[in-house]
Length: 282
Image (cartoon, rainbow, N blue to C red; front, top):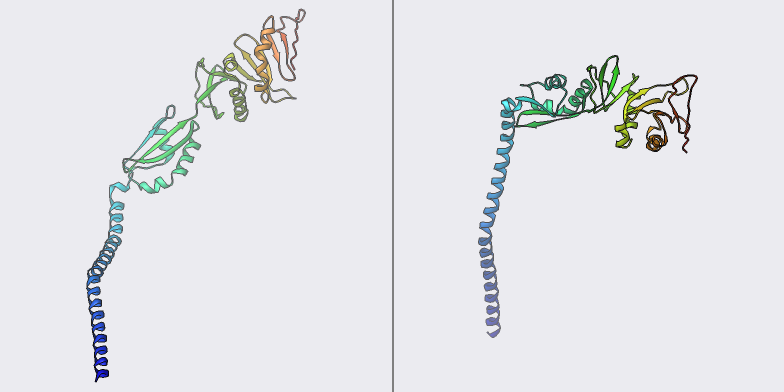
């Protein structure tokens, strides 16, 4: 009897344990149920938003494409000084009331075209302003010298390009070039001139291209103090630094020859009376 009672007690305990586990599982599932519902709702909303976007984006794109905002409303030019804005607009081939993005995405080719057709334009950029307007920002080459042509003067740009806009008088703020026809030679001379100290630049009134059979680089520099300098384009910047010292040692105005070494002599007044002085610098 005692054994039977013990077995019954053990069976009851096992039943109680199973019942408690089932109760715990039910309670745990009940706790998780709101979270599962919340997760499912969140996923549903995400899918709904995704579907809306899939339909909305193409719709907005279509509406934008057919709206005036996708067309160029206006084109403006800024930064130009010498080149008329109308000329830049014509050379750009940009069109109003045509596709904004097609023309904007082709802006590099447009800039290249402007620079090729407008020699004064050094660089340009195109950007979108006010939603659907294009703005061309221009940087122009500076006029750095004058080229003598007969009794007129033509502006020379920093690029070496000669502008065919004759002027009756040359401005006092720029050096005068004479005898030049090749833009490459002009550009080389301008670069050599730019490397000179400011005080020497200001002392030069005219640069004359005077090539010989044996030397196609010869220049004659006419100085404001009355002297004349003979120098090569290639060594202008290195030789001209000695000019102030040599000019100071000369008793009278004359010629300073820097083609090979540095020699100074007075101007010849006549064939019979020639006074020559030579000063050589290492």
